[in-house]
Amino acid sequence: MEGNRRVVSVPSLGSAWVPSPLRRSSQVGDGLPKFVAPTQYVRYPVEWNPQQPPEEELLFEKAGPRQQIFFEPGAVRAAVVTCGGLCPGLNNVIRSAFLELHLNYGVSEVLGIRYGFRGLNPAIGDPPVRLSLEMVERIHQAGGSILGTSRGPQDVTVMVDFLVDQKINLLLCIGGDGTQQAGQKIFEEIQRRGLPIAVVGVPKTIDNDILYCERSFGFATAVAEAARVLDCAHVESKGAPYGIGLVKLMGRESGFIAAAATLASQEVNFTLIPEVPFVLEGPGGFLPALRRRLLDRRHAVIVVAEGAGQQLMGGPLDERDASGNRKLRDIGLFLKERITAYFAEHGPEVSLKYIDPSYIIRSVPASSEDDILCDQFARHAVHAAMAGKTGMMIGLLNGSFVHVPWTLSVGRRRYVDEEGDLWAAVLAATGQPKRFQ
Image (cartoon, rainbow, N blue to C red; front, side, top):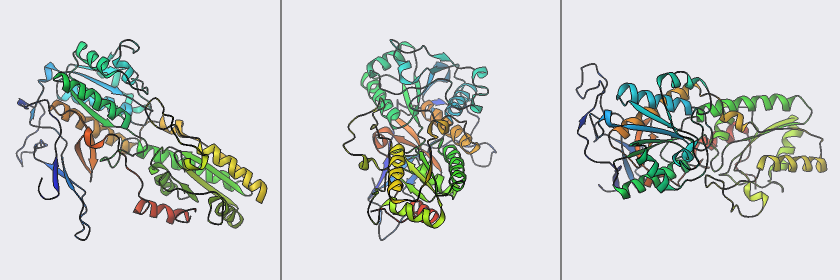
């Protein structure tokens, strides 16, 4: 570490001495794409203010193919697993990972683990399938995951025993923070046993809230689909006197989809996200502001992230789902009931349409923008694993893909900054006050 600068190291299975089979070079001017040197880094944060310098400057390993790799490709038996909720682009990642492993590195066998981590538990899981060119040929055109997915943990010793029994020495874990945490536990058990098995994560969260990953795949597709829903809610709200379109979108802890869809649609009047608490009643409350809007313009569109307003519904959120996430109360239905009751008492008579498109959005095929991102994430994950990198996920910082050790990222999230440019843009687009309080 130099001053407050630190190089972020990633675990490795050992020395990389095998020449890469990829048709690349390290020589400038030969017309070939280049290998990434082990000493290439990406700085975080990229902005620097001498009046407020960052507490710590991190240098992340730049992701990409290495000239020397750890594994002999002919000795690799790889596996891919998709976990958690569905998200646009899962099939794209599966396909691109298989193609990179099979066609470019020459790995002869790539297994698909069925239905998430339960597929690593032979007592309850379906057996893996052997991926082939015919199987993956068109899967990127469809939503969902051809491997299936599931939530919930499995015994880590059982999962590692399965990897050993199946002679799997390269595992790609595609999923959100819960999946990356499970991947970290698998890596730790592998490390404890001293096994030469690489475990690398591909961050998948439709909420776009994984730390050190400025955009996860599926987010752009979700925003585009959500914006279309908001446009339809706007049409519905204008089709009746004092019409209200209330749309609940994804966003358990972070309101990125709600905020971005608001900006994409430009038809939203109120955006409610988990990062910005709000009250309903009182002079500065949300409901009086909504009433003023209706009396003035005779219609309104509201978008609420699923994790917003949890404090309004009483009691601690102690229960957890199978993935370890807090079980949220339904803010959409709660708002629908409170809005209906408020206007029944204070008038005018409203026509409220409530829309929850979450599962529809999650299951659509990826957009062209996400098609590209999925391909990049998948191939960078393969490059990292073939080079013997492990205990890590692929991140995206300042437009560059990087290696992020799980010890630095799991259990931490990105949030919408209430004082940042994104939220300022939402306030400008909606015209709503900075806070309802």
